[in-house]
Length: 180
Figure 1 (cartoon, rainbow, N blue to C red):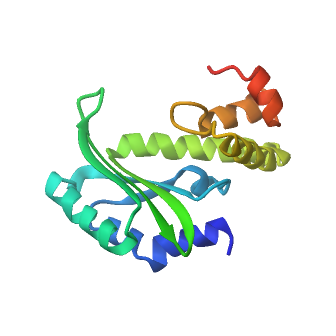
Figure 2 (figure 1 turned 120 degrees about the vertical axis):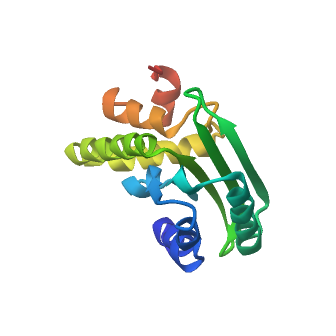
């Protein structure tokens, strides 16, 4: 089973998307949306108009019961624009594979901007078809070097390096990549 097929299993067969629909409209973003998955990771933004702290607890119970996470975090916070944001993240063994799932509850505009960013990357990749494999391989190499994380190098860094700076291998990336 491919990574994308495994992700579909989580989303549909395990009922994650169906459950998320109870809390708002889910939007799958990130590597899944762009068809550039390099590791077992799902990012889903959910419109937060229907979200509350009580619903966060209900969704937590669903995630714990359905996925039996090895790591789990849920929180409500106020962002820099004074908007309430909810986050749930978990790691779980699903079909004997470790998966990371991040759920963010945002306003429609924030989600629209994330989707537009993903779609812009997809358009750029279509113009340079070989870049898709370069992106996936560079992500995999950074993961193998334990350099692919929120506080080190992210997907955005990889897309920028490959699509704008024409860096296609990890050695060149580590030596020459310049963050914007």
